[in-house]
Image (cartoon, rainbow, N blue to C red):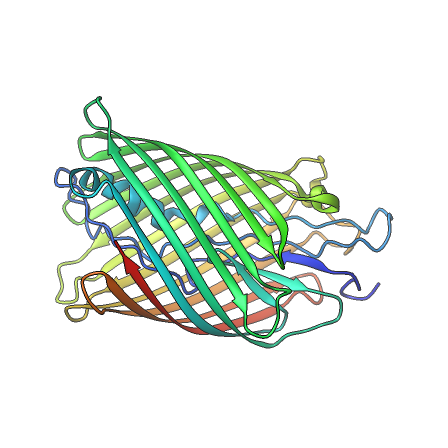
Amino acid sequence: MGVFPSTAFFIAVAVTLALPVASARAQAPADAPSPKADAVDPAKPGTQAAPASSASGAEGDKAQPPAATGAEAAKTEAAAAATVAAAAAVATKPLTGSFEAGVSQERSQFNQVRIGDSPVILIPGDTVRRNEPFRHFAAALDANLATPVKSLNFIADANYDSHIGFHSSDVDTVYTQGDIGLQYGLGKNIVGVKGNIERWQVGGSDFRRVRGLGIDMVSSLTDQLSSYLLVNLSTYRHPGDQSVVDADYRAVTGNLRWGSKDAWSSAYTLQGTYSRELNKGNDPALDVNAVLIRAAWDSKPVTGWDLGVSTILQGSKFGAVDPLFGVRRNDRYTGLDVNLGHDLGKYLYARLDLGYARYRSNVEGFDNDWGTVGVVVSWKF
C-alpha cells in the first residue's frame, strides 16, 4: 500500500473560525452589558483524522480517528452570542432565523469539502482535485421562550448547511443539527444546558452522527469585558466499517472578549480549548489530545460595514504509535480568515470571505494547503 489506499477514505480535518462562515451578531441583554456581545464568525469546525483503510484485515490497516478539537470547541463564538442574546430575544422576537446562499472557489492539495462550516478531506482512490467551485446553502431557526419561572428561558435551535460542487458530487456535504435546552439568568451571568444531535453526510452517504450535552456560562465582567465557558460531552458514531473510529469527545473551552471604544468599535477575542477524543474500541492509537488557541479582531469601520480577521493555531497528538504509520502521529494546523460584510437592507446582508489553512503532520503525505474565496448573501428574520 502506498501513501494512500486505493479505496475511498475520509480525512476529517481540524479547522477553525478561520474558514469563511456567517457572522451572527447578537445584542447583550440590558442587565448584562456584555462588551461587543455580537458573535465573532460562528463556525462548526471539524476534526482531524488519518485515512481509513479497508484494504485488508491486517492489524495495521485500520481506520484513523477524528482528532479531538473539535467541532464543538470552535462553535463557542456562536454559542456565546446565542447565550448572551437569549434574554433580550425573549422580550422582542422569540423566534428568529436566517437563510444564506453563496458561491466559492477552493484550492487544495487533496479533495476537500466542508461539514457545516468545517472542512473534511475526501480522497477517492488516486483522484486529486486541486480546484473546485462550490455552491452553498444554509438555514437556521432559533427559539427563545420565557418560562413561568423568572429568568428561566427555553431555547431550541435547528440548522441545515450544504456544500455542493458544480462539477462533481463525490465531495458534496450536508450537515443537519438541532439542540434543545434551558438558560437561566443570574445577575450578569447566563448559564445554559443543551442536548445536541448532528448528522454529517458526504457524497450522499452518512459519515458521522453526533449526540452530545453542552453546559455553558457567559459573564459580563465589566462594561467592556466578557467571558464564556463551555464544557462539552459528545459521542461520535460512524456507519459500517468506519465504526472503528467511534469515540467519546470531551472538551473545555474558555473565551475572553474585550470591546474597545475606538472609532471602529473594535472587539478582540481570545479563545483556548483543550479536548480529548477517546476511542470506543479502547485503541490508544486512535485516542487524540488537542490544544487550540484562537485570536480574532472584528470591527465596524463605517456604518453598515463589518470587517473581521481571525487566526488559529492547533496541535493534535495521538495516544500511541500506530502500526499503520509506524509513528505516534502529531498534526498541526494554522488558519487565517478575513471577512468583509455589508448591510444591504434591514434584513439582507452580503459578505466576502477569504480563507487560508495550512496542515502539517509527521505522517508522510498528510501535508496540505487550502485556500478559498467566496461571496455569500443572507436574509435574516
